[in-house]
Image (cartoon, one colour):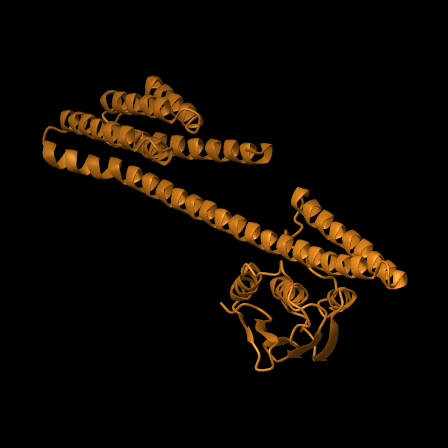
Length: 376
């Protein structure tokens, strides 16, 4: 609890105690004077004692309730007031129920109601004891019911917030896992292809082998930079989003250039652009699905021509990545299905779709529809 919140509670409790004290004193004084008497010093002292106790209701709710009930019954007997400290008793009962001690509040409320009914019947023997008990019970149990209802509401709200927070954390972890998979898979696939090229050409064409080694070096550095950025975001304590968002949503040059350095002949056609209100999730999904699709081409088809089409509509982006048949089949290129599943899950999480299937020409095509914002 902050100091500001604590000070505010002290002020509220002081105002509540003052109001309850004034109400009780006025009620007792009015009834006593109507009977031709005056309020005694002892009655004022008891009301004051209960008022001071009310100020401590948050720290010791049961103790405060005990003091208030005792003062209430004594004031009823001493001053012949049937109302006495009812206002303070209502506040004390509400506080106990709100603090979670519902059983204690119910027991004390019942005992106080019976005691008040006994005192009221003694003051006015003409009153029915049963009607007095019913009336006092209704008065005492109402604040208990209200306090418990508010506590239940607060508990449900807290549980809902905690559940939502856990859900968001789990979803964030899945996003991070997908991003890590995309980054590592893309980098290692490029390095694997280029290392194979370098090993094959190291004797016959040293210059091309040297270029492949340069690509491996640059790809390794770029992958490490992305991993450091993601780990840095995870370690940060500010409001930075947990998933990396491209600075320019329409800039896919890094992804395409990386695929080209791995040997893909990427032909790109882009129509339109993202609107200003596009969500970060949609931008990340577009870049990661594109990266994953190109990585799969590198992994399973090798350096082949790829047609990339991005068509921006009014509410969504349509993306197609279509590659020609592979020139070779890598012995370690068996698919685990994780890449396609990850693309589909990422698209579905924002209301989009992904389809992946072989083409009639023997190649492979990935089609995705990414809404600019998830509809609610």
